[in-house]
Amino acid sequence: MPLPGTMFAEATTIPRSKFNAIADNDEDNRHSSSSTIGPYYYDQAGSECSPGNMSPWNQTSPFAKSPWSSRAPMPNQFGDINDPANFPQNGLIGSLVREEGHIYSLACTGDLLYTGSDSKNIRVWKNLKEFSGFKSASGLVKAIVISGEKIFTGHQDGKIRVWRISAKNPAIHKRVGTLPRLKDLIKSSIKPSNYVEVRRRRNALWIKHYDAISCLSLNEDQGLLYSGSWDKTLKVWRISDSKCLESINAHNDAVNSVVTGFDGLVFTGSADGTVKVWRREIQPKGTKHPLLNTLLKQESAVTALAVNPSSSVLYAGSSDGVVNFWEREKHLGHGGVLRGHKLAVLCLAATGSLLFSGSADKTICVWRRDGGVHACLSVLTGHTGPVKCLGVEEDGESRGSDQRWKVYSGSLDKSVKVWRVFEEMPDLQGMAAMQQKMVGGMDEFSLTSPGDSFPSSQSLSPRNSTSYRVNKQQ
Image (cartoon, rainbow, N blue to C red):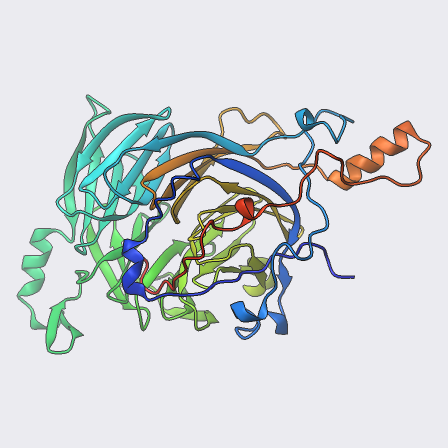
């Protein structure tokens, strides 16, 4: 018998030119909540994972096969499973709002949170309050990564700006450089061989991105920074001297995401519908990254990538609303497809045994991997616009097996929401069986009670049916 409640994506599309203008101003959905649902499982790899079967027209409603819903019990032993007080709550801690632009990027380190928007400001938050901020010359901040005291920001103008925290005042951030450096541009411009054709009848220096930077990723062990761009290239930078080591013509369309992974591998996802694997090799004249494999080829644009460092799993979200994944233990064999969103997956974050997927349907799905099987633990709702970026760090209140995570979500509704998520969600059926065994006298037990509710359309689906296709990630 098939598993109940399998989640399907019912994604549809609109042109990429409209993406930048999408920001829902729904005034009726200002609340934030978490609906704990389950068990929504992934589809095993196989013929059913073909692009044809991923078509939104071939799927059914995510509510059609769900006979019941549940909230997971708190770890207090043998508590009443029908008492809401005995359930851990994945939910909202707070919201950060600054009416100055859509949130496109964020990064967290320690007790600081950095957010980038389509204004000229990069905001720094501490303990849910604005701590400081600094301005850039380019309006749209599309990517932020942090390495020690340095903050790297990727911009619409094709430049990477480098900032450093002041030793005297941690609230002050000074710009200490730009990639590529001016002196490297001047030096490279002398040699004609340093120019490459980037468009018809247009040449540019290979060390410089000539279109928007869409993503950044760090390999701190090797001291390398990777940048992906709408110019279809992947560039490799050495952090110590800000030198561009390599430029790779990676894809046939915009590079939407890049992540460094395990075993010296780098993964890129593109609007051309592919996920590619590059292997770092140390050569006499520097570092090279030859193409190792192409993991995915599909019609839908690949919009987000994430690597879970603890389980060595690669995840790829796409504009059709699904998440594909590959497992290292299977030699990067395709593990399956997660279907939990109605619209495009725009961002991913992975930690511990959890995966977080943010979508244009304004929701965040929390997935848990257990023995190769993924189940959707809960859906975080409250944003009134597409969820564009995610960050996650360990919650300071975690104790032993009670692992908790603090999740940051940035949205085109101009807000950042902060959530607390529990990693361990005890098995409801097992708890119910144990409880009935202790009280005795019953041969059967019910998984529902008068207080339980079925998943609502507000908790699992967008409030309107606006849809679009993401090619270039805005």
